[in-house]
Image 1 (cartoon, protein in one colour):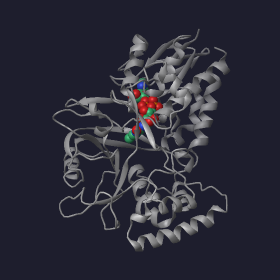
Image 2 (cartoon, rainbow, N blue to C red):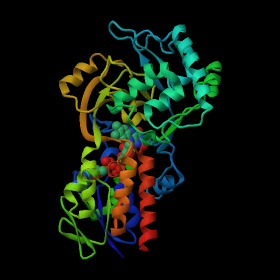
Image 3 (tube, rainbow, N blue to C red):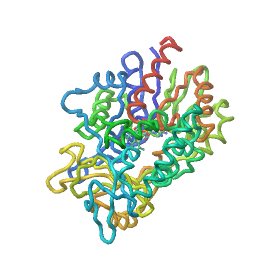
Image 4 (cartoon, helix red, strand yellow):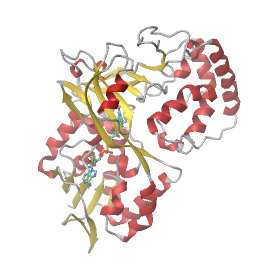
Length: 440
Ligand SMILES: Cc1cc2nc3c(=O)[nH]c(=O)nc-3n(C[C@H](O)[C@H](O)[C@H](O)COP(=O)(O)OP(=O)(O)OC[C@H]3O[C@@H](n4cnc5c(N)ncnc54)[C@H](O)[C@@H]3O)c2cc1C
């Protein structure tokens, strides 16, 4: 039996802890007063507020499903919802809006098309349609050369053409990531992007097919506050193995043992933030990576919980410059239990980086769905932005530390763009490799 320290009690650290606790002596350190990290939801005015994102589960793997089923009842409480999202345009680009007038707001008529945009080209003004059609022929020509683009900007342009890039893919993604899409490697969002062929786009538009070729067509949602029920149950199972309000400040390695803030362990699973490592990990092996880790870029999120006008959507995307927010997640439509009698329809307006309460309220006053402010949260670390060297460098750090019994898994530990399913999967894989490599 090994003594193992797990650092960070987000969904990754909790998964590692649950997977190791029966055969090892484990301690989980969490700097906050609550576990769950980015996957948490809280009650605000009696309604469910996802403090960061929606934490619905997409493309769930068998491994993740088995893990969750071992902890909570999948049964009636985890429901499968159909994605019904829309993209709003405010400059007269749309000729046949599906919900004409629904988003009427002051002087502007806000119109939109359902997502995915590439299946609804027929809804744009004729002159825009003509440009997109010409683009699709170029896309089809490019498909003959099988080279996969390396960066997000080149990927979107190669897949959807310049017009859709300028109208949606470029401005929307730049708003979310606050980054130059020409420098973000494609592998960062691998498996998360829809990738229809030119023929599939043409077919979908001829047939007005709303759902075909949509990546993440449905999603799973736990009606008890999303991933929070899973977090609560894991916290219960871990009991006093979980140390809340303990930000790890010093990790040393001596005599073949790891020392975490003065306590000895055989192994460490690091599920916190890579940026912290050069400061808290006092070993020579991390030093060559210090300046690269320092240079890594990231962004935060301001999540604003609001009452919204009733609507049929799961998400509404806002690519335009008119609004600083990029998305409205209508969590009130995910489950009735997310609302209450006072706030009959609630949701989260998402802004990248810090936005003050005064600025939030000014922005809300100009937004569709008449959002009424309830509360908000700012989280400093939400988007780990990769550059072309990130994947390789993180792999080098992992393979340098792994033989010493120091493992890394998690969104900010690996500087990746995991969803909950991917974070759980990666955590299980990490535990599997520990078992194989250490024979523990
Ligand atoms: C805006 C947004 C929306 C999202 N929406 C969805 C969605 O709808 N569906 C989905 O599946 N996924 C979604 N995700 C992704 C999902 O939330 C994450 O993949 C997942 O929660 C990551 O968990 P983690 O444990 O790897 O990281 P985290 O949740 O970041 O956990 C890291 C933990 O380490 C702790 N920590 C840090 N430093 C220390 C220290 N020194 N000592 C001790 N503890 C420390 C932190 O407090 C934190 O609890 C979203 C993410 C974002 C940012």
